[in-house]
Length: 222
Image (cartoon, rainbow, N blue to C red; front, side):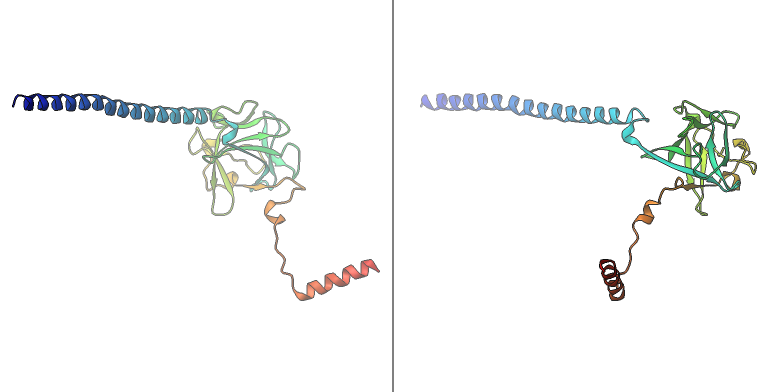
C-alpha cells in the first residue's frame, strides 16, 4: 500500500517537469515570431521611406518633350532664360520644353531644352525663368479642361495660373482665373515629330486591294 502514493508522486513530478519544459518553449516561439514580424514591418517601412523620401527621384519621374500652344497668341511658350513669353514659333529651339512629371500626381516642372531654365512664379505672381527648378515656385499642377485645353496652376500659390496676354507677355498670377483664354494651352509634338497615336492606324484589306497590290508588284517586276 505504501507503493501507490510513491508512484502517484512520481507521475506527478514527471508531468510537472514536462509542463515546465514545454511552456517556456511555446512562449519563446511566440516571442520569436513577434520579433520576426516586427523586423519585417520595420524593413518594409525602411524600404518605403527610402523610395519616397526624395520627390526628385528619377524612378518617380516621367520626362516628356513637347510644346505649349497658347490659345491667346496662336504661338508657343518659349523660355529665353530669365524671360518667358508666348511668341515662340512652331519648332523653335526655345519653344521645346522638357516637362518633368511625377508619376504619383499631376505636378510638373517645365524646363526649356535650350536655355535650361525653369518656368517659375514668384510671390508677386510674376513669371520668371530660373536655373534651379527644385523650389516649390517652379511646380505647377495640370488641370485638364472640357475644351481639350490644359491650364497650369501654381502648386504654391493657389488659384494663380500661368498665363500670357495677346502680346505674349506673362500675366500676373493674381489676375488670372481658369476661365480666361490667357491660361489655356494645348500640348503639341515638336515640329517634324509624329504623334505616337498616328503610327498605329489600321487599314481594311479587301479582295480589290489585294488584286491591286499584285498588279502593282507584277508591273514592277516587268
